Image 1: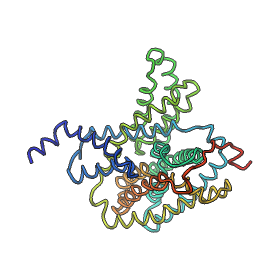
Image 2 (image 1 turned 45 degrees about the vertical axis):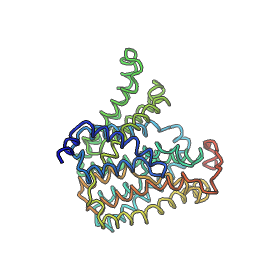
Image 3 (image 1 turned 180 degrees about the vertical axis):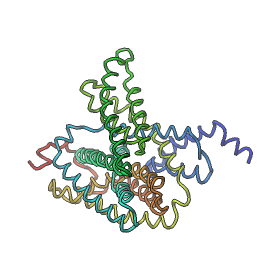
Image 4 (image 1 turned 90 degrees about the horizontal axis):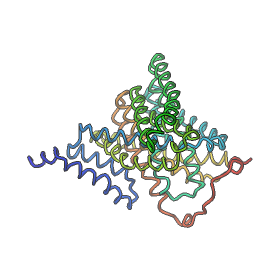
Length: 399
């Protein structure tokens, strides 16, 4: 027992953790198990099973870097020209999504007897694809270039709506709080371009090749500002990425492919700590029978509805078969990061029942497995997919 306590308090335990987070998940990927899921269960095992890292500030800091990098990457991935060129189709999809969000929110109010604010958060947790996670794993999925294009543009457009909805719901406890928070967020968005211009004209000439460090620092500061507003780190990091993407004409290196690659590499190092930390904060009660039943209900109802909803939209907007739309829907099923964040907000701020919290956790852990098993295993019909170029505006909108 004494030797075990010494091991827990030694530096060796961090070496073992690094091996566990960076080697074991890669090994298990051969079994179609996403590394993020492995890291969550490693955190669950370390916290519940071994009582390790329960109050470790180092893990918390590394996890913060992970979530910041992931949403900074998502913000940098936004291509406004692509969004504008397919604005009609994306607008139709957003309207479809908002209708679905309203319906699910109403259903959550009836089934779980929730007030409107937590009900909307439950709906966001169930319906919002995790853009950063999906974009990071998109290359590994068995999709052609055209399908990847639509997955990318749709998850980004929905994440923009979801982040705005998350901000509005969390801050709408009172008109004063909402107004102050909105003012702070608007000021943050207004100041970011000025800071980027100051960096480009004043600092960069004397600090060459410092774009990555400055952008990361900016994202961390923005993330902590929005964290203080009560909407977690992801909003600030995402806003920083969007601002850098808009600034690329004046400073191309700020949102170049090389910068995207650097942020992606940085995220790949720190994101495992985020998922590990998320697992640390789960307990046995979060997997109770009531939570399992609730999670199973979420899966049975929401996964088919989301797939058919996407397929129906593409059939109406693009005259595409529902089966083709469902393939894109499968890639958009994972809600991992967004659900983990919102589930935490629901538990900490709205004190929802353990069945709802645990059900959301089970729902997102299982739905994150679906694309790997469906799209990475080439069924006979998809053994040799036809790789099409990214669609043009006329071809996709039927003009």
